[in-house]
Length: 113
Length: 115
Image 1 (cartoon, rainbow over the protein chains, first blue to last red):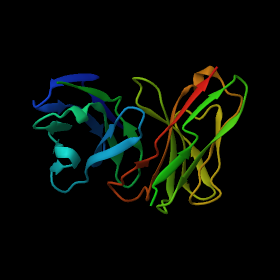
Image 2: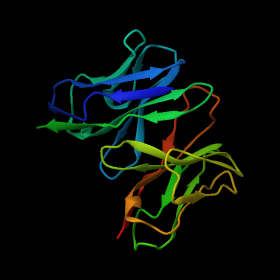
Image 3: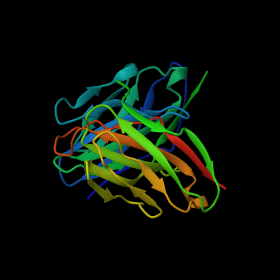
Image 4: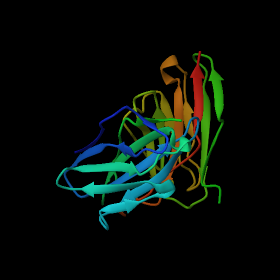
């Protein structure tokens, strides 16, 4: 069985300050992990993915995430928030070899000017 | 290359009516999915398909039907619409299940209200 927990339903940061969105997972096998972003009234867009290569993954728009097996975490970070980063972010885990896709419940990021 | 296209974008249905949400992808993906998204609930899988002619139930299939006659198309049918089906529906596709790290590509969503 696998699961994913996004620890914060809402995160609020000031423009120009760092962003940290937390994601913990559980999986019996080596998972693939993704972060997707959803802007209001839009579909989900892939930010980045981890597939057992480098543990530090760089994505679009300056986001990155680090896979930490010992902590079963895949937190999303960005050094400096921009107003356009305001959106909902989903952490997703899939099982390699048998794709059962599990979505987190999402974290809404608010960026304050 | 349009990716995943779903229609309509918005629809209001009366209780008991039926409708079909259309979905097509031009990436030659084997796998297609229908999700619904309710506020604060993440995405729930309704149905998925591993190829033309093959479909299977997801977590929340009741009240829905699907078909997959071609690789490109995966329509979702709502029979006897109920208020509980008010939601945002996303169609998605991916290349395969066997390969790790498959990216799932999403459509723009269909906002459905049942009144």
